[in-house]
Amino acid sequence: MQADRETLFKRLWDQYRAVTPSADRIHRILAGAEDGGIRNDHIALRTFNLEKVNLDRLAAHFTALGYEAAGEYHFEAKKLYARHFEHEDPAAPRVFISELLVERFSPGLQRIVAGLVEQVEPQAVAGADFPCSGRPWQIDYDSYRQLLTESEYAAWLAAWGFRANHFTVSINHLSRFDSVEAVNAALKDQGFAINASGGEVKGSPEALLEQSSTMADRAEVRFSDRTVEIPSCFYEFAKRYPMASGELYGGFVAASADKIFESTDAAA
Ligand code: OOG
Ligand code: NI
Image (cartoon, rainbow, N blue to C red; front, top):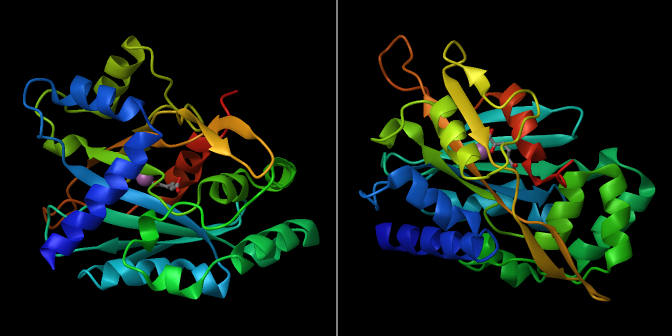
């Protein structure tokens, strides 16, 4: 079972790195000499809430590996619902899965998304590699642009499909940095853009979670009619604080997550 989990996370990581050249550079900056010392706090995946590919379908791959459903989160303005999943092994990253509430969008967006999901083979969704299977549909550039006018999330998902959209370094497990501010300063010094939506540090010690993220790298996507460079994936940094019990808080903070989603927006 653990071997299966390691295989899935290795595939997710390799798939993520392939379109996120910043990831290796950031690893080197944060871990320094003691490489291998990076602990992942969580990863995140995105999907549409249509039956064939919804949050539960993605989550099934993680619950099969021993993960259990934990917190749930609502994002009214972005029209998203999310849950996070935890594993009893503290070395296993949490998994944050969100889904777009497709029925709340225009008939035009609903039509495009239905056309994408129609192309998905149900056997592919059940396959062990589904969470890192990438984009199981064809999409033309105009449809991508149309989705972008209503939902950046919808457009990103339509272009990139099923993959980790970010990995998250656990600052609690770093030895050279102990705050989100210090991580941000080191990365900015090296020329990385930090997501400033809602402030460069999201959350607070009182909220028991502080987070920051880079703005996504850019990578080429092959649309059915042309190849275009668009935002790909980003890196996140999280520091958790102890609850009254002394145990580190394990959940997410919706107000912060709302801004982290914007890390895949095209840079302003
Ligand atoms: C997930 C954004 C939320 C967090 O840590 O709060 C998040 C996404 O961009 O898909 O990762
Ligand atoms: Ni995150």
